[in-house]
Image (cartoon, rainbow over all chains, first blue to last red; front, side, top):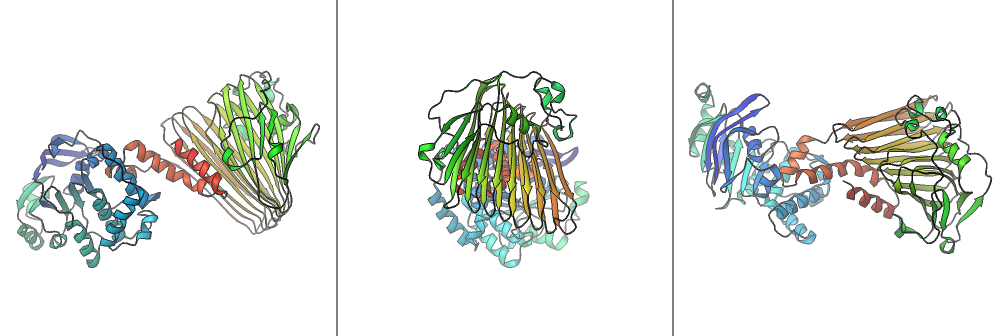
Length: 249
Length: 381
């Protein structure tokens, strides 16, 4: 269970999250929707520990452990995975090398045995096929010269190989055409399981047609201002976020 | 430039000397150091390139210590000269001139004959405490020959002055790749001056890899004839603590249709200081010259410093020349991204730094030497 209590986060001097409280039980997919500037991406960064996004107040627990006390790599080793809205290009580091380094670093941190090169290659090939990715692309430096859609697939490929337990998807649908959206969503859905929790951050309802949430929350002005079932997403799509703005202000 | 006399401090280049303004030699050479002791002769320890060749010339504390005469294949031989001519570029490289004047031994000249590809490990060993030594070596790559020079500066001891001169002649249509690995104590003062004379249709490639010393200067001057000759002049430095390295080079294009490609990359931490002075001169009439120079550095310590002086001096009309110089830090968002995937911060920094520097290693043509340098680099990040 992910348990966020009264989370306050400032970026620079500016308060962005102002007392956000949210529980996501294992096995559930929760969507976070909200207008631009509501603090959606900040939430993803704060949960994963990005420098400059530290909590000034409140708590975050995942699987009973205080996440805020851990650095980003330690959180990752405990299963936290943030799929970036804009995945970063890493010149000079082939995608394969990058993912294997990540996987083995996580395994070392957990006291597990590292994965051998042949076993890893086999896993990668299977995962790449499922996402309809060209294996040769993985020999290129990570995300360098990849299209927007390729970068997003690369995120899902990493997710499939790292097998995180808390998945945070930040605007995963941005930059994807319909075919890519379907493939990426299938990749995400394949990871749904009773011991995993997912937080799907999105501005539009569209993604939720493919990744069906158990709960939908509206994030506005740094707090959760409304929660409901999947029907809330449809209502938001029809009516917009306007009604939540005065409430939050 | 003034002739250096170690007994007269006013003759030693200082920060007031334009060519030495970032490497204040005078500060370190207040008194002439006594002469370094002769090291015992005999089969030496392994150098960094031991596995790559059996041809080896070892100069220890300025004197010939080991010459693998018995292992030499026919196409590589060495001769010694008691009174050789003065170096041609003595004027421009005062420390090189000093090395020739004060050399503790004869000048040893290695010649590579044409035929199958030749290799030589040239090792400059310094094992000295507060003493100084000077030495001079020559290298001739005969017309049409192909050779790889695997050169290492291996230092131990404390506070020594090592001053070395190497003169290289790459004759018509010959090909020489020079890979230089420099590893010296933090207290050493070390100057290596190289003058390279390239003939038409020849190819000279160089990669200098440095980790600094109290003051370390690795200078290369190339006389480029144009005439279809090509030169690659690369450098790599990784410096920590208070180390200093200075990669200075001048390439003079004196004829038409010459090519020069230069790429230097470095990283500095602590209070280290990296100096890059690269100059390409295209003389009048050297039309069709294609010259590119790049220097890119990372500063990973708040008190570390980079001094870069890239220069293109062009007197010809029809040329293609470009230079680029950047100094920066590791990308914070890339570091976070890597940590988010589970890579600890130190490892992420090392991986990004290596990725930044590896471009220079990848340009090394000799495959096994490339792997030696790659491992050397990985161990130091």
